[in-house]
Length: 239
Ligand code: PXP
Image (cartoon, rainbow, N blue to C red):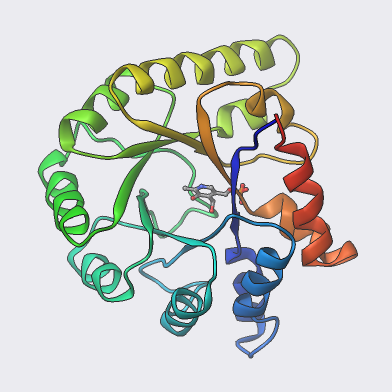
């Protein structure tokens, strides 16, 4: 029996704190409790507008985490500098639009490829693994390999939003993307919109090594606590 690596995205705890611009709930505590519940990785997105995670959170979590740390960020000079200073185990490059509620789509690597290649190289030279957050799109996967990424994280939003006959189609599209990613020698992760109810079809896809899940785990944690919510998700990731 094996298990997909679980990255728990703790941004949503910081969102609640920032709603009042106060000190609670603390995403650093959520990170520690996630580890106690069996998380393999703590994932957070340091956004350019600092709408949820703050530099202080990023610094403390990077220092305190006993498991892996995955920093999601835009491919900018400012973020590159921060990442090299924090030295997380992994960086996932994500698109960022200020008006979006969450990361709504994947990167378009066919535009601005030079910037992605340059940030990826700088981070890899600093000993950090780098992933591209992209849709299940062949051209984007091929480009990820060309630009030097170690891994891709497949955006599962389309699958999460699908209903009826669309579900099988969306699963097939993620499965094809995984196959193409492996063909290009990339590690394959997935995430976005995954819940206790829909994660199974994604777990069933062999070769996905890591899932990053936030909203559903933190939502459940409101009622059962972070540790238990994470533990329940960890159980679903057994193969
Ligand atoms: N992976 C990436 C790259 C993301 O940007 C997000 C959203 O913050 C997630 C995973 C987690 O998505 P969700 O909160 O819907 O589980």
